[in-house]
Length: 640
Image 1: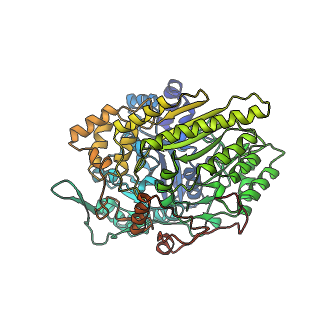
Image 2: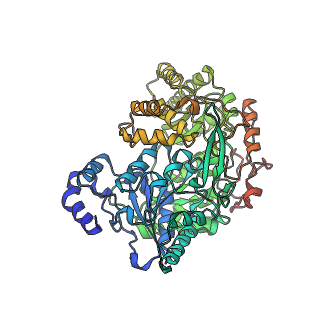
Image 3: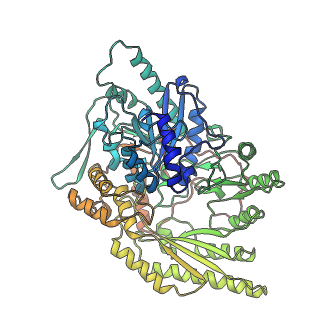
C-alpha cells in the first residue's frame, strides 16, 4: 500500500475509531521531515511501546536529530500501535508506517529497534509482522530492510538473535552515523553495477560486521552439550570478529546533543526538557546493570548544560527541565548548576526536576533548591531493609544516613516520602524483609513527631515500592539464581501482613513478570522459539499489567519443550560459558567475580571517582578515563 493511500485510510477510517489518535498522526512541533530523493540512507527508529512512552525516551530525541542533521541520511519514527489500532490495521491489511512520511516500514533501508526492556520483545515481533517484514532474519530477501537493535538489553541480545540482522553495542551517537553512511555507500555501489548481485544482503552484513561495535548474529552458531548446556558460539565466517566491543563517546562534554526537541500534541510520560548531565555511574551497586554497561563516568560542564537548557526552553516552550542521569546529584558541579538554571529561568517560572536522589543531606538541600518553583514528594532508594544486605549489594548507605536524610526532608516541609526496595536479593533472609517494614514505620513515626512538635497537622504519606530482584548480565550477580515465583509471592504477602500503618502505602511488582524478565535477560538463542510461540498466542505489551497473561508464556514454554527454570532459577559456575561472553562491555570478568565474592562477604567497594581504582578494566579496555568537569565543586562533607 502506497503512502498516499495509507494517509487517506488513516484519516478517513482509523483515527476516529482508536483511543489517543495523535499517537499516529505525527506533525509535532520540531518534527523533521526530509525529502527521500535527497538522501542515501533511510532509517526508522522503532520504539516497541506506545507513543507516550517512546517519546519520553532521551535516546530517541538524541539520535533523531543527530541523524537528520546529516545531509545524506534521514530518520523517521514508529511506535507500537495500541491494541485497538492493531485490530483496525489488520482488518484493512494496512502495513505499519512511519509518522513523518507515512511510508510502510518495508520501504526503509533500516528498521532500528531500541531494546529497553525484556518484556517488550513480543512487541518487536508484532511490529515486524504488522510491517509485513519476515520475522526471521534468514527469511528476509535482499530488498527487505535491515532490522537492527541497540540499547541496554543489547548486553544479551541472544533471545532475539534469530530476528535481528545486526546489533549495535554501546553508545549510538558513535556508531550509528558511520553504519548508515556505510549502508548508503553500499547502495550506490550496487546501483552502479550492471547486474544485481545475488546475495548482496549477506555481502553488506559481512562488511558491516567489520565496523567496531557491530554484531551480526547470523555469522555465528550457538552450540550446546548433550545436557542442553550452552557451550559457546562458533564463527561461521572467518572474517567475523571473535569479540565485539562496545563503542563509547570519548569527550562527553563535546558530544552531540540536540538543542531542539519535538513537542507532542498529547501528554507523554516525561513531558519536559531533558538534559543529560552525565553518563555512567561508579557507585558499583552489584545488582545494577546500567552501572556496569555505561561506565566510565563522563560529565558535561555546567557551561555546556546551561547553553543547552537556554536553547531548549526557547525552542520548545516547556516549563520544566529534568536533569537526567543514573545519579544526577553526583555531578561535581550540580549545586552551582542548579542555582544558575533556576536563576536564569526564574521569570518564566521554569522548574527543575531531579529523577534520582542520593540518600544524603546534600540531596535534600538540592531538592529544596529545585522545588522552590513547584514542590513534589521525595524519592529515595535504600534497596534493602538491613545494613548487612545493603552491604551485600554495595549500596553504601547506612540506616543513620537514611534517617538523617529523611529527618531533614520532614524538617524542610516535605510530608510525602517514597522508598524503593528490592526483594529476593542474594543472601536475603526474613530479617531483611522485616527490616523493610521496620524502616517504613520508623520513617512514618518520625514525620508525625516532627510535624506535631511544630504544631502542624499534616498527613504523613510513606510509599514503599517493592520490586523483585532480576539477575542481569554484566553484573556481579549474573551468576545468581532468582527466587521462585512462589518464594517471591510469599515474601510479598509477608510484608503485606506485616505493614499495618495507615500512613504507609505498599506496592509490589508481579512476580510472574519478573520471572519472564529474568528468563529473557539470561537466555540464549533457543528462546526465539518461545518468543515466537508466545507472540502467536497473543502476547504483546507484556510490560503492561492489563495485557500480561502468564498462561500464554507457560503454554509457549511447554509447546517448545524449553524449561524456563533453567535460565532463571539456576546458580551458574564462574567458569561456565555465558550467552553474552562474546560481547565486550569493557568490564573484566575477573572484576565481576571479585565483586560477587565480596558480596558474599558483605564487603564494600568504594566509588572510584573519589577513592582508589577498583580495577574494573573499563578505562584501559576502552582507552578512556573518568571525565569530571566540575573540579572540586559539589564536594560536600554531607556527601557519601
